[in-house]
Amino acid sequence: MQPIIIAIDGYSSCGKSTLAKALAKRLGYSYMDTGAMYRAVTLFAIQHQIDVHELSDAEIDEMVDQIQITFSYNRDKEISETYLNGENVEALIRGKEVSEMVSLVSQQSAIRRRMIDLQRRAGKNKGIVLDGRDIGTVVFPDAELKLFMTAKANIRAERRYQELKAKGQELDFEEILKNIEERDFNDTNRKEHPLRKAEDAIVLDNSTMNQEEQLDWVMNLFYNKINGDLKS
Ligand code: DC
Image 1 (tube, rainbow, N blue to C red):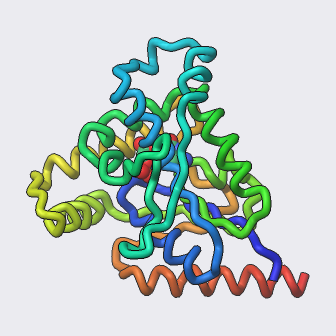
Image 2 (cartoon, rainbow, N blue to C red):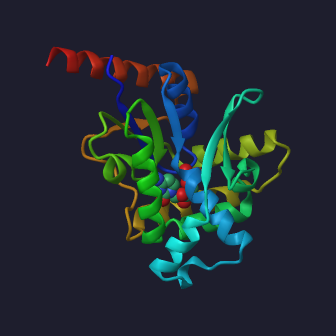
């Protein structure tokens, strides 16, 4: 079976990365969390007190040259963790400060250009699942299987609320909902590579589906795709 590229785009807090990871595991594919890359760049900017909006493209290139982002699988936790210049920053990039800044940082075209370059290199040999906002439209417009994930904003906020509660963090539900709505607005209205459904992407609205149902649904699509391609 020829390996393919699976592109998963969609709104924030839709469970894209949970599904992408499960899919990669099931298929023996690699997985790339492109949102984590923008988050790591944001963390670098915060740590070095850099306002990326004040930088020229050349200065952004210089900054990105100082950043090395890698992923490493943690066997104990069974998750892939993000490293920034060799330091495990998985917890830091999910924190409030980075979450609030990341959609602004990810609007910078010079930063996007560099991240997209890295993402294309990672997908050169296929056999990869990538999740983000522009994978099926910009990064890999020829990806063999494209999904566009969505769910009602209040359901996404409720899931996020429960997730944070389970981690011992008490946050206001309305605040979470507001953050999700703001991110939706920024992601879909930004000038550079806004979140769009690729014409050939298949919509997965998971408002009423659990993780297992979503994985089954996509595996079905995957086999249909592979069988269809064999027949044609
Ligand atoms: O998926 P996430 O919430 O971790 O993504 C963090 C931010 O990065 C989000 O505001 C959108 C942006 N992003 C992007 O612009 N393009 C991508 N391919 C992935 C994420």
